[in-house]
Amino acid sequence: MWFKNIQVYTFNDAFTHSEGHIETQLSQNAFHPLTALQESSFGFVPCFKDSELYVESIAGKLFISAQIQEKILPASVVNDHLNEKLDQIELDEGRRPTKKEREEIKEAIRAELLPKAFHKTKTVSAWIDSNNGLMVVNAASEKTADEFTSALREAIGSLSIVPLGSNASGADLLTQWYVEPESRPEDFSLEADLELTLLQDPTVKARYKNLDLNAPEINLSLEAGMRICQMALNFEEQCQFVLNEKFQIKRIKYQDTLIEKAQDSEDPRSDALLMCDTVTQLIVKIKAQIKHEAV
Image 1 (cartoon, rainbow, N blue to C red):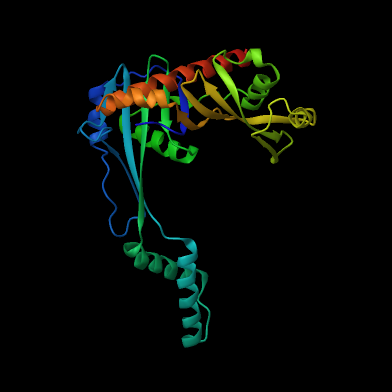
Image 2: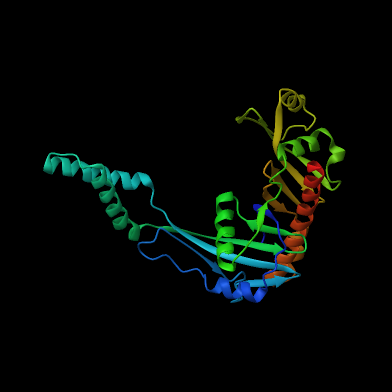
């Protein structure tokens, strides 16, 4: 269990749900495979393959997993079948179906194609660290993380969280880290991968990869009003990662020494704990910088 892309949340209120309560509620909202006519299915699963528990506590952190299945039925395929059907009706009856009829035909086509469609399955895992007031979801997209947190909230009754740094300017902080290296956490070092954006028009971007971090092009972009929206960093020789303006942590690459240390144990919980300790350390450092920035 090595999280690669994470969405981080902080708690507004103390997390007080007991492990027993969570276990009961998640088991009642367990994952069930897709039926023939279902487009998607979401439910909770045991967080470790060698266990039947839906929540496990490791060193004070609660681990939870869910599974998502989705049918792959491209809109273009449905529309192709729809157009064929509409053309045939026009040929047979000399008329073009009404909007209501088209919608009914389209739904009938979807119902016909869904049982034949392939599906994709993905697992989303998370841990809750009540001591540090954090929830970390292993998801590359906000949409997937939101689906997970919404389902968890509905299952256990309450979950008062907000995205990390939701009231702070990530672009300002990342830019400050570049312009004033001493402002960065001392064990964060820059990697040669920066992305800048224009505040007035976020679609205007500049990417500098494998370029000297002191290259004049970067400073010229900053002088033109651009701000750093994504930055690659190295944390204390434990892992490399990319931090963006939304304080999402992407493309985490753990150092070989950490992976080898985990391989000494066959228990996946040891992997989880090593990973969790490393990621928590860097999140706590980022969180402290956000608080400083917000003051």
